[in-house]
Amino acid sequence: MNWSERIQEFVTLWVVIDPLGTLPVFFAATAMLDAAGRKRAAYLSVAISFGVLVFFALAGHWLLRAMDVSIESFQIAGGIVLFLFALTMISGSGHGNPDPQVETNPLDVAIYPLAIPSIASPGAMLAAVVLTDNARHNFPDRLFTIATMAIVLAVTLVILLLAGRISRLIGRGGGSIISRVMGMILAALAVDLILSASAKWLNLPPI
Image (cartoon, rainbow, N blue to C red; front, side, top):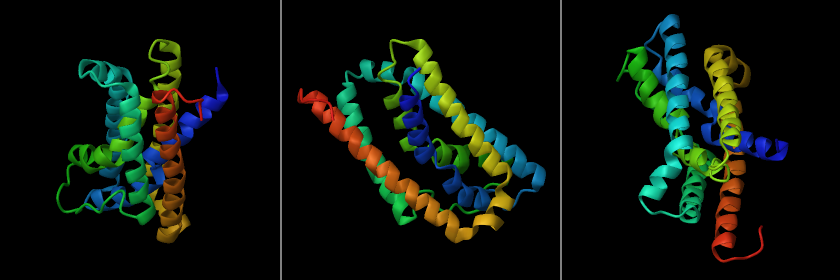
């Protein structure tokens, strides 16, 4: 197992899922729920997100082949989208501000806005496809990527379950700073993704 690849995958998935950045959405979306409802919404949102991301990790490449889209094209497009997503994180608008009055059912809240588009964001879906590209003919490597994804989502679940305590500890300002730093890291990873795919397409030495 290549530990450097696993670490890079963990960092990539961490910044696109952005567990700490999900907290404001969780607070707003579950404001009308009791403690048990908030706990159920946290479990359901993470489970739904895991299912969505695993689908993209396992079937994303099949969809690309069915549409006759090269992985280089998808990597460049995905890098651009990830970069734009990173800009929204840096500017502080990446997770939106849903109206807590819209839904009060834990399942409805877990599906939207928690699972989609907050946890299983467009950036996370794209990352799931891109990170499993090099391992598409190696099922054990793909399982390692899914396991890394599961670890990030498990941490996300713990953060959501401890949302009240974390909010009091880091405050709104601390959460905003962390989200922006993660956005800068994601922007750098997105640029690297675009340059690497472009170099492969142009038959240039690996960057």
